[in-house]
Image (cartoon, rainbow over all chains, first blue to last red; front, side, top):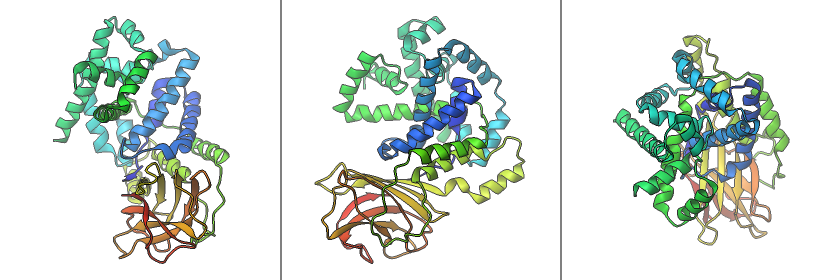
Length: 166
Length: 237
């Protein structure tokens, strides 16, 4: 299977969103790409998209760094604030240049359609690197509820993307 | 799939399972292809949350740092006797991938005008690199695999091979590129794997490749063949 690796420019933004620190984000970005280089032979295009592979490697590196410095609470708060205040124009311009505008808009639209409690729970896991228990404590919701929100959130995203495609 | 299992799969996709849960879930994954498929689907969905991060411009010098870091880690396998042009510039295959990846965000400045962006699109620099995963065609070595990174603009690529059995002394593996412009697959050079069945080798095809529809590796006589004659070893399309 041939996969164009065009337009994979979300990694740095995602890493920064997790770490909220320019220098650390650059270091993690470098580590992530070196790891991709080392692990490239294990990439299986029949199992996952290159985007997913690259994003997950970058995210894991960033989460490792986040946990190491134990500043989770502050950065998650900052991340949440920035998500709210994000200027859409900058993202649009960048992604337009990548020829990814349509896909990005489709995904962002689908993400914005998620019920807030579901989006919140997944954001805390994805960008905050929190455990189930930590998410439960942060949201003041029972553990079972958090698990259900995460499952429903992913399925809601799938449904929203399908609707956007059709 | 029942809700409980799907919930576990969702948590697994986001690395949220506790270690003991994770071990049990991974054991279940090994014997359940449908569950594996579901996990992959959920991981793809989870990865899309990356789009939720506001755009952040990395500094231009980060690209150089990444290049240097990759160069520092690379272990270059000596090029075996090959019919491919040995004078070609070496393109570290991951560098190509990384370059494309980094270019995607390094070259774009949020203050650039629409005109500049249109120029970038015209250059289509992001679409020039492809990755192909080649699967084994050998019943005797089902674990054989390879990855090709192909830079269509530079007309160069790098092949990385894993778990491919070493050849007899009178044989070579030969890489081919399938381009609809040519009746026969285009010769991209020969290579031999090391004793552990791996090699990482740059290649440059004999003809200009306009559209790489597939990559294949066959087992040929020593030095290679003008056209593919031997058994197919790896194929990715």
